[in-house]
Structures are given as C-alpha cells and as structure tokens.
Image 1 (cartoon, one colour):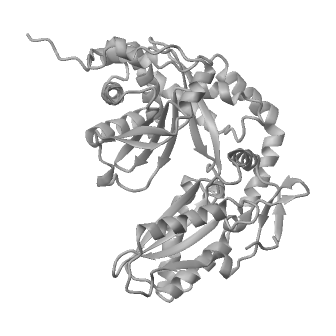
Image 2 (cartoon, helix red, strand yellow):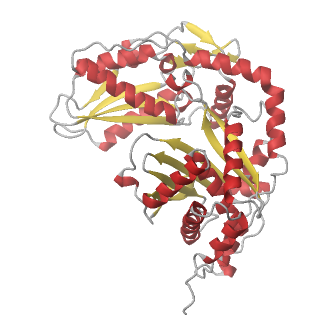
Image 3 (cartoon, one colour):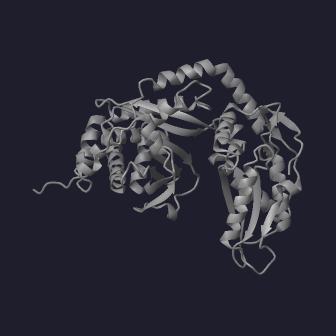
Length: 473
C-alpha cells in the first residue's frame, strides 16, 4: 500500500550510491534488511500498538521511501498509518505455537515488500507466540534506513516505550528536532562544498597502496612460524590478476571462526591504551597493522573499514544508515617503537574517520583497485554490555555467506573484552592457516602490552619464534 508523501527531499549522496547498488541487484533480489527481536514474557497488545505508533511517528526515517519523481530518485516521508505500520500477530490468541516455517514465510514476505523501494513500507513489525506462555517481538527494517548504531537505539527506545505503556504511563520523551532528511541535507551541503578537498585527501592517503592482495604472503608467514601441517607444495598460490581476485571474492560462501580478547589480555590492552592516551580501538588497529607486518612481512598495509557518522549528538539520535567507507594505509618501519607507532595510529584513525567516503564514484576514487589492494576489511562496533558467554572463543569454523574481501573482521568491543569474528574466503585460506594467524595475533598482543619501548622489528622477530617449542636445555 502506497501513500502520498507529505515531505519530499533529496537523498544523501551516500544513499544515492546505495540505491545504485540496489538497482544492479535486479528487481527480484531481496534487499539486505536488519532484524531486531525482543523477548516478551507478558503480552500487552494495546501497549504494543501504542509503542509502535509513538515510535514510527517520532522517527521520520521509518516512514521514508524513495520514489522516482520526474526521473529522479527522491527521499519521501509519508504520514503514519496504522494499517501500513501495524503489528502482525502470529499464533497469538490460539493454543498453537508458530512453526519456524511460518516465521520464514513472514520474513520472506517482508523482504519482497522491502524490494519495492519506491512505495515500501521499509519496516515491518511482528509478534510471534514462540512458547505456550512466551512471545517474541520482531522488527524488520531495510538496511538503507538502518545501521548497527540504529539497532541499539531501536532496541532501547522500544523497550522503554513498551514499559511506559504496559504500566499505563504516557511516555515523556521529547520529539526529535533533527531528522534523517536534515542529516541528508547537511551531509550533501558539506560534501558539495568539500568535494575537491576530500578527493585530494584520499588520493594522497592511498597513493602507493596499490599492490594486489597476495595470499602467498600469508602462507609464507605460516611456514616461517615453524608450522608443518600445510606443506609448502600445498600452499603455493599463483599470483592473481585483478579479474582473478574479483572472481574469487565473489564466491557465495565463506568461513568464519570466533576469537576473544578477555581477562588479563584485555586488561593489558586497556592499560596500554591508557599509557598512550588513546582509545582501545586505536590499540586494535595498531595491533592489526603489527600482526600483518609480522605475519606477511608487508611494509605497506591497507586496511578498509565501515564507519558510522555518529560523531555529533544530533546524529546519535537518528535511525538511519549513516555509514561510509574509510581506509587506513600505513607504512611500517621496523625501527619504529611500539609506543610511537600506537600514537601515530591514533592520530591517523581520528583524521581518517573524520573524512568518511560516502561514495567512491562521487570522489573519483578507483573502488575496484582499492578493493583488490585491501588486506583486511573491518567492521568495528561498541556494546555497552559485558561479553556474553555465547561469545566465548571457539575453535569451530563455520560457513557464512560470501564476504567480498579475502579477510573481513567483525570486531565488537564490550566493557570487559573484545569479540573477533574472523571471516575469510574459503578459496584462499585454509582452516589451519586461520588458526595460526589467530595465535600469532594473540602473540603480538602479549608482546606489545609490555614492550612499548621495543621496535616493530623486535615484535616481528618474536612472532616468528613464539609458535615454536623452546629448545631443551
């Protein structure tokens, strides 16, 4: 069901790039969407309805669609309509408990609705009866209006509103004075005024970082660390062209393994961050550079990352996809001390994140060349919770959808630890190789924690021997 929009504005340049990506996927492709779920021991249907009504009216982004008007894609906001944004109750009020197949059908139906980006809606709400006396609320939202930060915001607001209404209290929450369309206008104005400077910034930063990804560097590092399980004859890989790499990256399935940094190791990392007056995330980026330098002997390393534009208070209150790309190029000098390297990394991370790339095409950056020259792609996020038991380290390798990079790290910072999801291309990396890389990364963390005055070259030498048994005396 489509409605006449009441507000029509220009999408952000970042949204325009994402819309072009959706167009290449074809009309029948199900777009990426985010799922938020909340357990409900008791169900107050009236409270659920009031919660959704307040929530959708408060956030214009949830009422946003992208119609084609006069041959141009626009960003349009429609009024709240209970039928359009109402909650679907599945098996509620019956003696039956819904089946997983029913949930799958509901989600597939929502995905088909989301593919109509012009009319939407781009958000759907469900309540399922999952047990005889338990319920679960689901919110599905198109990725173009939702990022990781939005997920946390959505969960907090929905729980708070539901608690108010279930208690018979009207919520006292001020309306938003800054909406997604305001952000898009502000971003576009800044980008158009800063386009040339931003283009020069990134072209200068990534100049010289155009060596194609070479998997042989990793297998050579594996052998130098004294490993023998993967024999040299089995680990040899021919140098790949850009087309070869892109074909390999497009493999529809990848593998992943989880690891954690917790306990004393995380305490040491926090102490290192404090001693260098920087963030834990800067220590993580510095340690990844050092790890790659130690494992592959590469001196020019290119990391790519997904960054949320949430640096201002007004941006932090928005539901939307405020994401852009950022590159972290670093040249490693073996004589540089670890503390100096951490300080330089902190400054680089801060500067680069302040210059998010909303669209490679808009800034005339060669997206393909940067893609095939990237060593690791990183998605770093923070949670204000403790590391849950289900996030504990596991040696299990499991299958995931394709990742479009050789290595893709999902890193989550908790209050008491870090969780790493090492996602890797199964055509390039063996499980044994990834296991050893994780061990090497832990070795690097242990070394840099107490050797800030030592050099990167000394860290590299240590990592080459850390996996070998000590000689008998």
